[in-house]
Length: 589
Image (cartoon, rainbow, N blue to C red; front, side):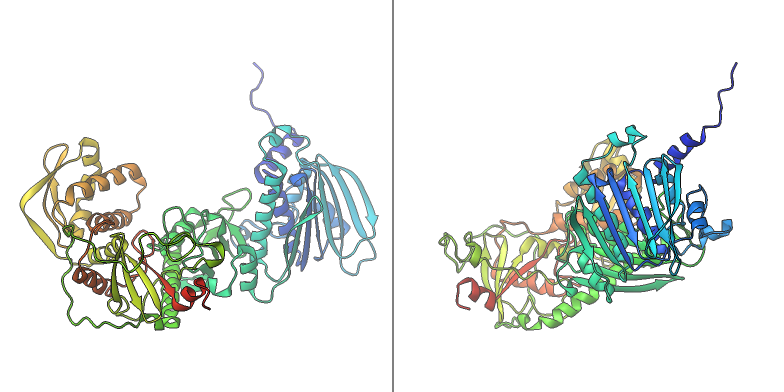
């Protein structure tokens, strides 16, 4: 019987290795530009055609190579960056000079022209499918030029899985953007089919490069982040609330100066934005993490785009806390700059109680016509008369803003209308009450209300099984819950801030959320989810009419919150229009 195990021919092995590191044109662009940066280039120009399949040309003004080094760089496992296995954990470069070249050469027609500074002549090398077809002396400026033509010409199956040329060019743009963020001192250019796609002039201030790459307009849109813990240091920028995106494409993480993809880092960032993002929103962030020597492994992915940390818990908490702190400090600063909007005319001397459930009553009068003319006021505004909305302030340092508003009534039984000295304010009554309850539920020893008659909640066997492991979470939140059969629970106490009758729908939704999450729920997430659900179930609803004293009580309570600008889900609790904005909308300014 002939042997079944055999050694692959070198050309087949080369193509397999190339497929691991060079899965698409953007990967080849990334590898070649990283080599240019490791060669101390100050200017890198990239040209692609046909999405990078027809041509990739990367020219740099780096240190170049001599003829002998250029030939060795095309040999597999040749490198100028490591000498021993231990060096793999001390890397401070992006790529190994020569590491990517054999992989790219194996699946393309490759040409290299390189010259060292001061050399009388350079070297030109041509390869096809990884085989050398020519070496010659060549006149060339200092630096390196690499041309890759007909990428994947000898692996047609790979081409079938690529997207359109425009989509592949967009991937190349993303690769250049990430490299440009990590090297603001370098000039980058990228063109596709002769048309310029991206151009990043060298920037003296890294924040300028971050603004150029992320597309944010003002330096104030980027909040500085600086933190350290147990040898790890974090620096960079995150966006202020209000600059969110609908995808995570604006999130950039770097370990050293190498862009990485890491779910743990992204999770920590989003946790830092907790209560400031609506579901489906993502922040813009450019964050650089430096790790102690030997504390990070960058060799867990062929393209080195993923990493593994020796102490992931420390890194997660560092990113989360640094993000939350930057947002908190920005909120204080923002409120200080706009403190004048807080004044108002009415002093309310006592704080009336606020009830979770209010019977419906006749609405208070609203000082606006029910059907205003189109293009004015609250009707659909004409484009030139549109009133920009002042976004909700994240953290209000000065207390008394909401309770000192002059109340005008309710709008649509959903929004409290108030007047400040500087303009008009609308408060979403449900979102505001959610925030109040959410923070009360977070109190270490919040009051609980024993039920006169225990409430039985039928959930079904599966939902009950999902909830039973979290009875301690419920107890810490103020609930007393115990099993009452295979598919039923008995509730004997609830948090005092919740109204009677709220337990059944709340526990049903909490159990459903736990069941949907399965075993992937992190240890701290059930408590957070329960608080948000409880606050939502206990809050007053849109359409619920409030008396003047009840509105005042809600605003007093909102003033006592640590983060009154948003509800627990990240939606704003209020919007404000300054007098100048309103005057401009009426063409008075």
